[in-house]
Every structure is written in C-alpha cells, then in structure tokens.
Length: 130
Image (cartoon, rainbow, N blue to C red):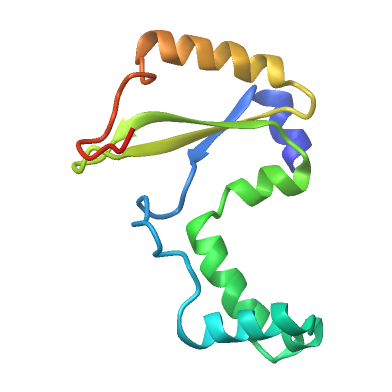
C-alpha cells in the first residue's frame, strides 16, 4: 500500500504524536508496570513478557502516543517532524512528513521551504530552560 501511495504523492503528512506533548515524566512506567520492568531488567527475565496481555497493554500505550512514527520506522521510510503548529501553552506540535524510500532529498527541500515560510528555529515556549 505504501508503494502504491508514493506513485501518486511525494510525501505523507500526519501529526507526529497522537496526543499533546506530555509533561516530563508522564511517559515513565508507574506502579506495577515500573516494578515489573525493573524486575525483568535486573534479572534478565525476558520470559515475563509472555504474561498474557502485558505486551498488548504496553503496545497500546505506545501506539496511542506514537501511532504514525512506527509506520515509517518499520517501512524504512525517511521522515521529518517540524514544529508548524503551537498549542495554547506555547508548545510546538509536530507535523510529520514521510517520504519515499531513499528520497531524503525531497524532505530536505520541503523542510527548507517550510522553515522559510514559517521560521521556527528561534521560537521558544513560554517556559524555556535554555
């Protein structure tokens, strides 16, 4: 399907994330998930991942947050995320462009055009530590 898509289009446009930007620490495992992860890592117990529903539960959490980036990763397609939209809190909302296999040049040209039209390099959220 992706190959057929790219016979008609140069890039696929999607949001970068499936949810607004999280607060620092929001994605860290909590409760039972954190304890189980620590247990597995400390003891090298990959078999724990066979607990019924555990991988599905973790995957659902991940794919709710990043539903589109994995498509590009699995397919080996070049992508870029650019901050074209800013939310009410002043945080950048990523816009992801995914190109044809091996065609990074189109993405670089598009990035130059987008940054020329809507410069973002010096834009900062209201609370900025840098």
